[in-house]
Length: 84
Image 1 (tube, rainbow, N blue to C red):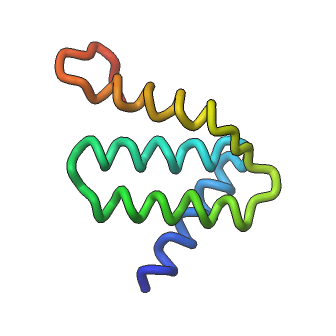
Image 2: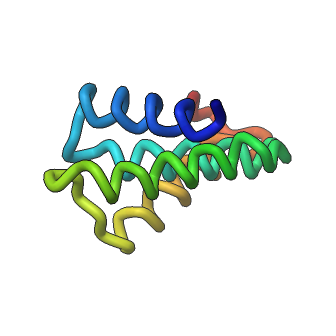
């Protein structure tokens, strides 16, 4: 059940945009970690790993991952005018 959820979410992100799916999963990891939801953060980390396994066209540049995470955390900071 749990495995099928992250596999289904990975397939959905890949179907939406294979190239950016890995980054979107990491964006969601950052979002849920910042909110203190460790279970969801773990889920999206597993989704990112599944995307890496199933999507040959997914880009996986660590510098881009860091920028995506920084951007997401900036959106979540109190007083930020940026929206999710």
